[in-house]
Amino acid sequence: MASEHEEIDPIKSNPDSHKAIGVALMILVLVGLSYALTRNGALAGALGSQTLDLITPDFRHVSAEYDPKHTPKIDCPDTVKAGEWFDVTVTIGAGAIHPSLVEHHVRWIAIYKDDVELSRVYLHPVQSYPRVTFTIALEDSCDLIAMEEPTHAAPRKSSKRITVVKPN
Ligand SMILES: [Fe+2]
Image 1 (cartoon, rainbow, N blue to C red):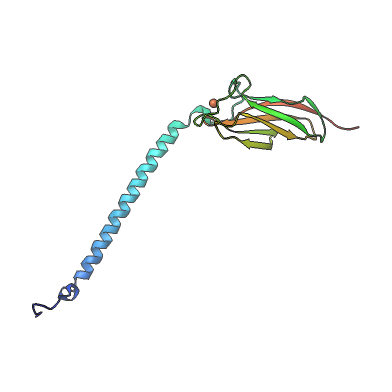
Image 2 (cartoon, rainbow, N blue to C red):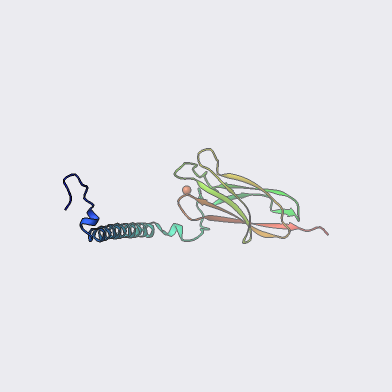
C-alpha cells in the first residue's frame, strides 16, 4: 500500500487505464474526421448547386452574335502582301467602348488565322483601354478572327476576310 507522500502511478494502479485512453483518443479522431468529411461534403454540395445556377447560356459557347459593346471591331487592310508585317487593331466593341472597370472588363483580346491562334493580349481593368494593335504576317488568304473574353460571359468573336497577294 502506498504511503501518504508516495506518488501514485495511474497506469500501474489501474492497468486497463492506458487502453481506455487509447480508445478515447481513437473516438476523438473518428469524430473529428467525420465532422470534417460532412462539412466538406456540405460545402461541395452548396458550391455545386451555386455553379449550376451560374452557368447561363452566356457561358455555354463563343458568341458571334453582334453586340455593340462586345463584338470585336477589326481594323486592318483588306489585302496584304504575303510575308509582310501589317497591323491589326482590335477594339471592343464595334459600336461602343466596353467598360474597363474592376468588376466588368475585357480579360483578353486574341486574333486567329482561321482556327489557329496568332496572338493574345491580357488586359487589366481601369488603366487598360479595350484596344490592342497586333502586328502579324500571313502567307495565305484567310478569315482573320478577333476574339475577346469579358469578365461576365464566354468569348465573343468577329471575322474579316484578308486576301494575301503572293509575289509572281
Ligand atoms: Fe461587358
